[in-house]
Image (cartoon, rainbow, N blue to C red):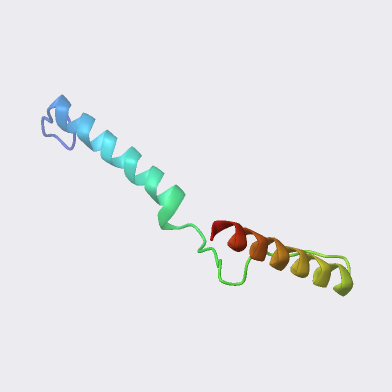
Length: 70
């Protein structure tokens, strides 16, 4: 009995599935942060020289990958 009314077990089971599924969806997709993939990965370098080396290395690797695809 919920709020003084008799509720069938199958309705309670469907409601449980809906609440759990909605919670999983909200936790994994709906309220997650949007990833910005336009600028590439975030680079945390100790110096500007290290950052420029990493950017050049990644650019060279991407060019190599593009050359291998064609």
